[in-house]
Amino acid sequence: MASGNGIASLGVEGATAAAHALSLPAEAYGNDPQLEVMWAMKAYNHAEIYFNLISSVDPSNLKLTKVDDRIYTSFRESFSDLNIKNLDPDMLKTADAKEKWRPFCNQFDGVVEDFNYGTLLRLDCEKDYTEENTIFATRIQFFAIEIARNREGFNTPVFQAKKQPS
Image (tube, rainbow, N blue to C red):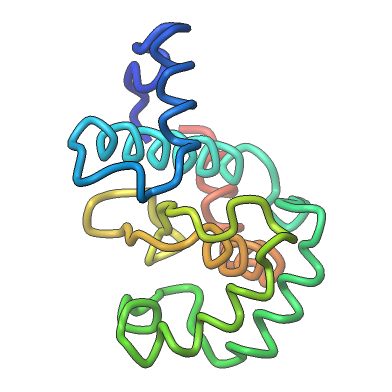
């Protein structure tokens, strides 16, 4: 993932203002383009850090939250047949899919901080974040799918590819 200036380009005061703005409830804003850019930068920064992490450390050893076991167990009970290697966006975004995901996600309200915040999720887990390979998902969906990918070995090829000498 290419690294740009991102949030660092805001400076201390700008980053502090951005952090404050991002902590306010959504109702405090209309469709503010500056806020949308800040959210996009935050989501991109999170994606970049995560991809660098699974590229540098064997993903099967990663612990993403304090409740990984609970998230994984509940996820696989609710979505036992979901293809996590190559996600179909419809399995996250259609009206039927949202109805199925809602009870799963809501059980982590108060358990996982910012469980319903937006984040970026790779569709094909063996590829980097690109416009074609990225979907917007909630934070708990990201954790559930990435914990499963890590435990089930689907993120291992990313680690192995970065580990090999060029």
